[in-house]
Image 1 (cartoon, rainbow, N blue to C red):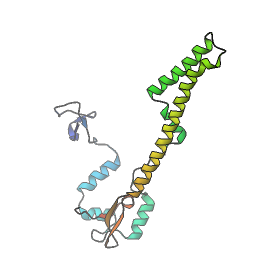
Image 2: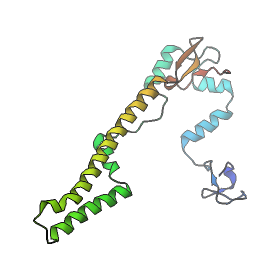
Image 3: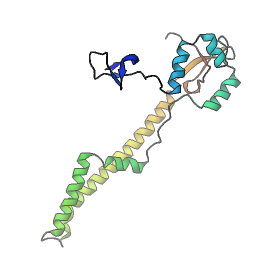
Image 4: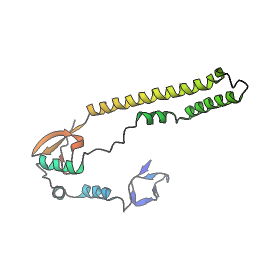
Length: 191
């Protein structure tokens, strides 16, 4: 549950809500310049915004100007975290509580047999070695499967990239969403 009343927000908690454990969703004064700028844009008259972003309300940006802004600001998308390597995925598989217990039991089995009366018999170590090998093989298969699933998901997201209509050079054109730039006039419609 969250509160949207920034005036009653005290240290991230809302003092005027019936439930004091609710988190306030708005930032207090003195927040980042980006949020302040967005808030100012929401109440700024359209003509002033058009002048500020150097665009025409009826014609939109020129293709050349939009390309310059895109080159300067980059794509309109969230920064993607780096894809984990297969080794990192493998190591992540070994961090679950059950896997750690199995690895500890494998090591304990080998240590008990190494200090027992049958320390010279190689067959006495089979239980510990078998548990360790099964855990490692399982982690390898899981890491490979997760890697392939991530590749498939990435390919699927590229196939279904969203597009949007904007005004460019006085015409309504459809462009990929990541290429929308500051100053574009977005055409909204139903459907």
